[in-house]
Structures are given as structure tokens and as C-alpha cells.
Length: 215
Image 1 (cartoon, helix red, strand yellow):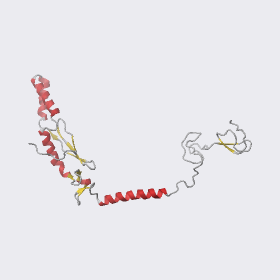
Image 2 (cartoon, helix red, strand yellow; image 1 turned 60 degrees about the horizontal axis):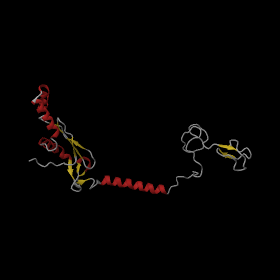
Image 3 (cartoon, rainbow, N blue to C red; image 1 turned 120 degrees about the vertical axis):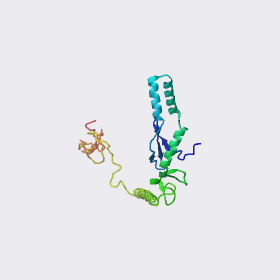
């Protein structure tokens, strides 16, 4: 009877037709370790049998095909794979500990709080937790201070904003002239009757009613 093998939900099976290999992952940070590749001792014999079958044909070819089917169907219930997985677990297990707080398998290097005996999710490292709380406090204080700061001081919010230069089409970032071509962003003309400044689209002077030359 095959013995029970730990690490049942935090590993990936990288095995192929040549042998067995497994990759174990920390259930907190996602990093992990890959076990050494274990070559299947029967692979060479099956390969030889398949080669002979291709040359000779007949029963040997049938045996070679049966060997291939065995390789494809051996799945996770193969005793050879169980032995390989058990060996990989023995190799990799010292790098992981199962947290009794949450049950996750976590890596020693990053995610294990040794003095407390729990993972850093259940028992965060003091300095790491303090740094996180300080960062949260700075963000909150910055938000509060920003809300009481006038960011529009000196800006005429009623003034018409031109998003693109009417001459060259370049995007603008404020000001009266285009930073790309130097053209005025708000094109104006002068009334022929009273010399009042007129917007480009005006058909009549708003001061004296004179029709503009472009209308």
C-alpha cells in the first residue's frame, strides 16, 4: 500500500514520457521550488521496444504501441509516479512549513514568521506591518491635506479652455499661445465699428451690433 504523500494542492506535475519532475508553490507569495528531474528507468526499454517494432512490425509493433498507451494512461495512480512524488516531497519539504493558523503551505524564506510560529499572513512581521500602516497613514493624511488645498488658485475657471490649437491641432496645456506653432489659442478680431474685440465665431458685434466682415 502506498503511503500518504503531503503537498496535495500546491504543486504542479511537470512529468513527461522521459521521467518525473514536480514544482511546489508557496500558497502565500506564489514562489516555489522545482524538484530534480527523475528519469524513468523503464523509458529506455520502452524506446528500444518501440524502435524494434517499427523496424520489424507485427507483434513487436503491437508491444511498442501498448507501451506508448501505458505511458499516456499511467496518470496519478501509477506507483512509479507515487514513488517519484514522495522522493520530490522529501527533497523540497524542508523549504516549506504548513501554518497551523490558516493551513497553507508557505516558504521559509519569505512567508514564515519563525519567532511566532505562523505564516506572515496570520502573524505579520512587526517591521513589515508597521511600514504598511505608515504608508496607509501617509496616503490618508495626504488625501485630507489635499482636500483642504486650493489647487485652482490663479486659474480662471470661467475662461473658455481650448484643448487643441486651432492652427496646427496640437494639444494644449493652458496659456494664450500654442507651444508648438506659436499661434494664439483664442482667435479674436476687432469690430470695424467700435473696435471692440470679437470672438472668431461672432457674426455681430455684441457692443454696437455691427455685422462682422466674415458673416
